[in-house]
Image (cartoon, rainbow, N blue to C red; front, side):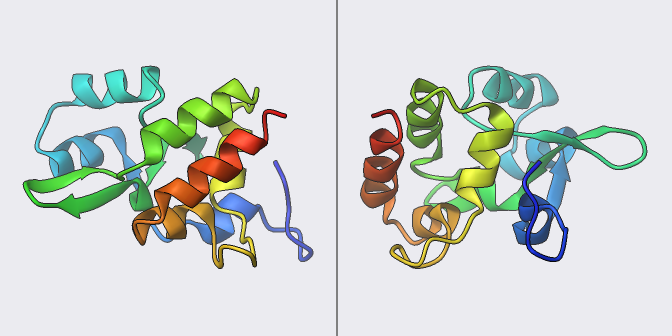
Length: 128
């Protein structure tokens, strides 16, 4: 895990809310099996947290869409590019939630602001 200057985990400090797999299933209007498939297919990322090591997904990865809540637009493609650059799930989470003054904000903030092209361009450049 990467830490900030004060010793806190970058991802833990940046994520506003963590959702369990059942929470995400409820928000997306689907079942737990579908959410687990999204995780397996790298359409979503999660990390184990807390005393009980609960699989948790950043709430920022779910957004309101025209037909209700959905996986954050641009996230699946960005995750593919990060995987191509040989980023582990943990490294990808850290990259997505680390502030970048040139964006400005974090890559997740940029995806949420519909600036996915710039985020994917930067993710693609990581592979070179």
